[in-house]
Length: 230
Image 1: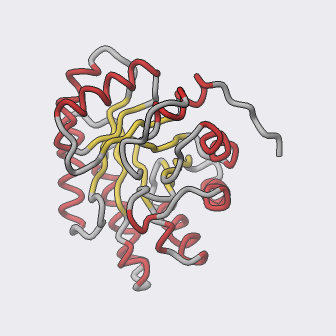
Image 2 (image 1 turned 90 degrees about the vertical axis):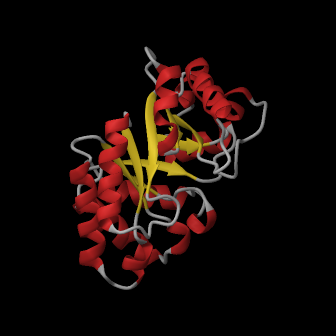
Image 3 (image 1 turned 45 degrees about the vertical axis):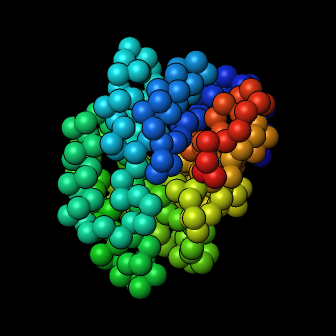
């Protein structure tokens, strides 16, 4: 496999710059949005309550507004997740990363696991959907099963993890597995532990096309700190 050498601009165009901390402030959202425009990141990732605030700052830019649904536990009812999807779309979200129900999967409730995903995707009404599979909590067999079920339910992206808690960090092996399963039917987003230019390049070469990280500025400038452990 040929290893691509990425430019700073190419890496920036793959980053969804993230701040989903519970204590994020209005001023933090302003700075997050400004950084996205300055460094030409692909998108801003924030909590649903800040979508409208980000829209004010990003008006006229090409930065995509992205949010997280059912986050961070994934244990909301399917109806709650579906209603939340409809609401965030109405607020202006262009892409939605949503939590899988890990308990369903680990209980062998595969029909329920897949059906919930399918309902969430349907509620997205054509918007880009990315399922956070939380590979850090799954066995190798469960990783494959989760990704295959999500793919069959129609998600746009398979994503290894939310990047929080036990969800795990992005690894070359996990990204390659997702790329193998996705084939030409879906894309791969990677999150968790992507903190510098080298790790970003490595994960992209493994098959990811988007990176979720709170260290976007640090990755492209070599300076500053990540905004969280994400």
